[in-house]
Image (tube, rainbow, N blue to C red; front, side, top):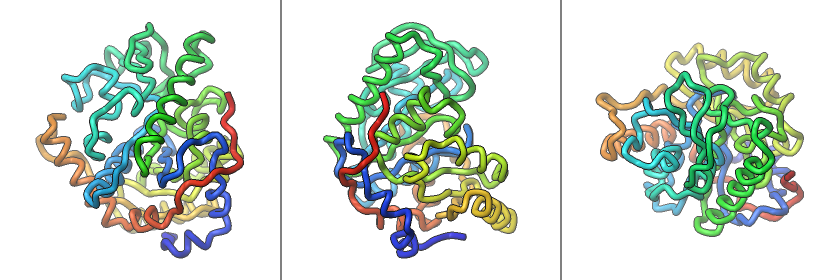
Length: 310
C-alpha cells in the first residue's frame, strides 16, 4: 500500500506527529530518516530529499548525530575526518559541513578494525570502539565521554534548528540495534527533535521478522511519530509489491513510497563534481517516487509532549 498526501494527513497517527518535543527548539518542517538496518540506503534517500528541496529554493540542512567513516569511502577524502560524515548530504542541501551538522564521528583506520578516533564538535578526544557498521554504543563509553557526546549532539541540533526552516535528521545503522538509552542517533536525538519518522527498508531485505523486531524495540515515543516505510532499491516491481505487502502486514504501517535502485553514477570518485551529479540523480529518483508530495504535506513543528531523556 502506498498512501497519498491526503490519506496521510487523515491518518489518526498524525495527531501524535503534531505533538512535538517539549524541549525541541525547532518550529519548522522536517523529517527523521531511520533505517531497518545498516546498508539499506538511508543516506541515499536523505540526499535525494535534501537535493529535491534545494532545487526548489528551500533552505534545508542535514543533521546526523553520529557517523562512522572509513578511508575506503570516496566522499570527502581530502577533508578533515569530522567533516566527512555528512559531506554528501550537505552538498545535496547546498551548505558546507560544520561540526553541528554531525557532532559525533568515529574515524576508523579501515572497515575491519572496530576501534577508531572519536571526534566531538570537530575535536579528537581519543579512541573508542564501535559495534557493527555505523554504530556507536554510548553504553561502551566512560561517563565523561558519554556526557560530552550527548551534550554535543543536543547543542548541535539546537544550533542548526535555529538556522534553517527545514531539517532532515538521519539515523545511524539500524534503528533498534542498540539499547534505547545508548542510542544517540536513533532514539535520543529523534525523540528530542520530535519530527515525523520514516523508516527506510531495502526491497531486497524486507523480512517481516525484522520489521516486528524493529517496531518492538522502538520506544513508545518513537512509535507515535512513525509515518511508515520507504521501500528503497526497487528493481523488480513484482518483488517490490510482495515486499511492500509483507512490510504493511508485519508493521500495520503504510509503504509511503518506492524508490528505484540508484547506484552511484559511472565513474563516481567522491570528487565535488561527482557528488553533485549523484545528488541530482538521487533527487530525481526520490521525486519520481512521490515521496516529496507526502513530505510537503507535513505540518510545521509545534511544541508538544515528548521529553528527551538524558
